Length: 180
Image 1 (cartoon, rainbow, N blue to C red):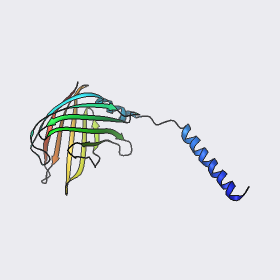
Image 2 (image 1 turned 180 degrees about the horizontal axis):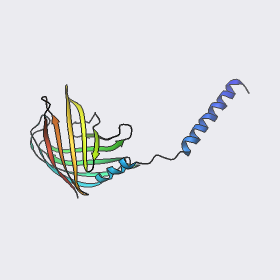
Image 3 (image 1 turned 90 degrees about the horizontal axis):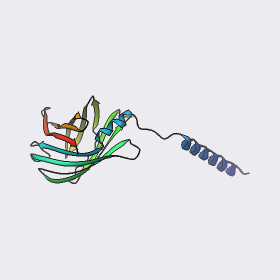
């Protein structure tokens, strides 16, 4: 057998061994942090109050959310429809847990053009979830904080805050949700 033939056979053998080992390994399983996301699975009705802020006018908001496990149970995907001071809205959000970041993550977009290009990082302390984010609004860096408190197995309150140029936090939205 020529040298190139032996090399090809050797490489093919290595490739087959790699695929056999990869195939034989057990698929990853969600950890307790992923399982904690199960709180969000279901249908929710949310209502709240938007405060005057640089992103939207003040007024009442109401939405319905349909949240379900994504295949593998490492993430929850939520589809939201609602009305608020800026009109009707639709959005999609993906919640997960990143073992590498040791934090909960959220990705989202809506029909107004808003896209979460940063990854808000969340922590849980008991029944309180806190997501911190730093993103761009035009040319300006904006820090925000979203706090959720589970008030029962089927309800929660929330508060969304933004840090102003003076370093002070201002509430831009608050409200409550309940499983329907």
